[in-house]
Image (tube, rainbow, N blue to C red; front, side, top):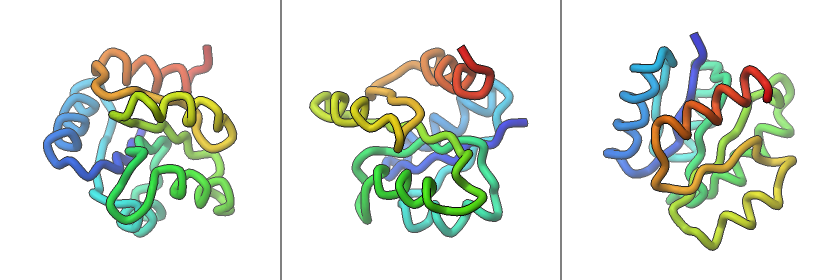
Length: 122
């Protein structure tokens, strides 16, 4: 079972993502901040992280940068999520940091399609 760590500061969205991913066979856990994500990564050992682009303590980009430098964690797939349409170009211009980008609001179908593409290839 693929493990997905959701880094999202909006509790309702985090809960909806957890629920919908679980219904599709993923084990999903959410945390409200990047600092909490860093604390749980070793224990949860996610295959992918859904990271909100703008978090209270720091950005999803900062988390992606930490992962890319963290020995043994470079292979974790990172999907950026943002509700700000102006950030789409910024995220898409950073292919070394993010493996995919989702513009909020997005459907569960779109989310699962992105995850399947990341795990199974094109």
